[in-house]
Each structure stands twice: as C-alpha cells, then as structure tokens.
Image (cartoon, rainbow, N blue to C red):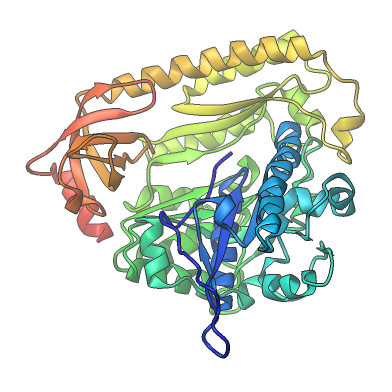
Length: 485
C-alpha cells in the first residue's frame, strides 16, 4: 500500500463572503495498491483543481476525502472498510462543527463491490470505478443530493477529459513521474480480478503519451515510468494510423529533451517478444535512457501451476525472455512477483519456484500468499491450508532476501549514476535512485536534487545504499547522461 499526499502544507479556509470569490475546498486522497492507483489519484486531484479544490495532508482538515482502492488481495479490500470507518469519524466530527465533508470510494474495490459498499459502510457519498474519475466534478454535484454510484465502463476515453496538472503541481510531485499508457487486461489469469475491475486492454495514442511526457519534462521531470496492467501489451495508435509497440513508443519518449531515464511496469512475459516485433528487446539494447532494471512477474516456477493460473507461458518461456534480455543488456537486473499456496500447489511445485528464484538471481521480488478473489475461477478450486501457505511464504521470502542482499553487496565499490530526488533524513543528506531503483544516500547540497550524478557506493544496508559523489563521471556514465539530457 502507498499513500498519495501531494501538498505538504494545509490551506486554511475562511468563510465565503457574499458575492465574493469562493473559498478553496480541501481534498485528501489516500491511494492503496499499485502505481496505477497513485497515477489515478494524481489525475483526480488535477481534475478537481479547476473546481476549487486544493490538497491537504490531513483527513480531518478535508472537505472531500477520496479513498482510491485496490482489490487485488483480500486484506487490501478489507482494509478499505476499516479505513472508511476511520474517515467516517472525521466526517461526523466535522458535522458537529457545522461543516459538511463528502466521503468517496474510488478504484477497483468500488468497481467490484458497488452497492455493497453503501450497504456495509454508512456515510459514503460517492462510489466510482477507475474508468469514471474524469466525471468526478459532475458526480460530486450529484452526490450533494444523495449517494451516487458510477461503475459503468464509459464509451468516451477518460484521458481526453482530464485536466492537465499545473507545472507547480508537477514540481511538487518530484523529478520522477508515472504516465499511464495502457489499461485493462485480456489475460484472465485464474487468480486475478483486474479484467473485471479495469476492463479489456486499451492503449492511449502515441501522440497523447508523448505530449504528456513533454509537459512533465518542461516542468522538471527527469525520469518517467510508463505504467499499465500489461504495459508491454501497449498498442496505441501512431501518427500513421497503425498500432505502435511499447519499444517504438520508448524510442519516441527518449527523444524528448530533459527525459534522462525511462522505465516501464508491469509486464507480462508473453508480451515481451512476438513473432512480428522484437522492438522492446531492441530498446533495452539501443536506448541508454531505458534503465537496466525490469519487473517481470512470473508468479510460479512450476509449469503445472502456471497452467492452472492460465498464465499461458511456461517456465522455459520465461527463462528464454530473461536470456534474451541479458544477451542485449548484460547489466540488467530483474525483479518479480510470486504467489505461493495457489490451489493445488504441491511441495514439488513450490520447490520449482525456489529453483527458479535461484536460477534467475533476482535483485528483489514481491511474494504473496494466494487469497481467493470472489468471481475468479481459482476461488472455486480446493484451497490449501493457511498454515501451509504461511510456511511456504516464509521460505520463499528468505530465498528472495538472500539474493537481494547478494545483489546489493555486489554494488559496494561500484560507481553508477544516481538521480537525486529529495532531501535525506539527516542535515546535508540527499537521496536518489540508482539505475536499479535502490535508494542511494549521499552527503550533498539540496540544490543537487533533480541532477544525475555518478556515485561510488561505500556502504550497503538492508534496503538502501550509501555513497560518495564521484568528482568526474566515468566515460560510460557521462555518455549516458549526455544522451539523456
């Protein structure tokens, strides 16, 4: 789970004078789950800006509270109901003070449960799905007169109706930004609700993605991460009217002045290559702006479980993709997602997963116990005992941690470029990200935030690296910086 709070301070409201300008209304957004939700939450705030809303870090100071929810895992959905109860208390407190607060539930839980949210959670004024937030101003006006639900999949493209963020808002959000290029999923993995909550795969046109990235670059963004449920299934229309691949889109974005780094997530192994197009593999070879780190979820190392999951790739298929990427980019590092305790998983199936982790040598990974999601095929399969799932999760995480520690240890003494993003915890310290997404902390002036500088790693901690600035960047680092700037 991640929280999205873009404005660090609060805006105080004074009573609106008769015939005078409307006082600003305060917006609090909390985002659960993936990067897609973080991006969506930012776009909600941008859309509500022209309506007079400014963001606040405190829910008890808000006039509108939006919980942007995730439905991927059982605990995430249940946490939403707990959070609604907490926010309802702020709403009731405001009512006693004579102030009305509206409470909205957005995102995938809203899409999946709709009326159930209103039944289970008193005090919710608005429920809307991830395809409806471009209509948020109109929905809020309707909710003034009673609870509203909007979980339809609209015909119009929501991105055509969203307000662009101001340059000031972009600068507040930092030098790295997400850009949604693709939504939805046609894969129908048996454990996953995304096709039902986000809909079919849809890609934004190339020109609109490029225009958004260019606006971000003009506002000081140096790194863009392209996001989608299956981002490498991207097939947005190009200027010639034909679909573009993600690889070709990355080439277009790499040409934007100021964009020094590119990433993309989350990928499906089946969409990394095709018989007709190897442009994504080639982009890893040809674009210095494309970072040598890829999140490539596999979920299991067992062919039998992969088939039960309807992943439509084998262990060998996955390893072939890894091999091809390492052939064109030897310094590339991989992270992944794993599900343990999927229905029918035997000890031998689980052992295959452990062997895959060892074979690939991941720089990190996310591991989860399988949780049945209502309406998915796997929810109706015979389930494994919770204690078995828990024990396997612990074993898998120990193996993942072992490889992550080894990867970080190999960084000691190395020099690589770091994009500095924010002040550190201590005076005189700033923090950035390595090409492999590791936090890197150095002693340097805050004026260096937004710059990319070579750093030699001197110390390694569990989750971050420490280093010293390199006086003169190595030739390969200088070349990469020149190509990206």
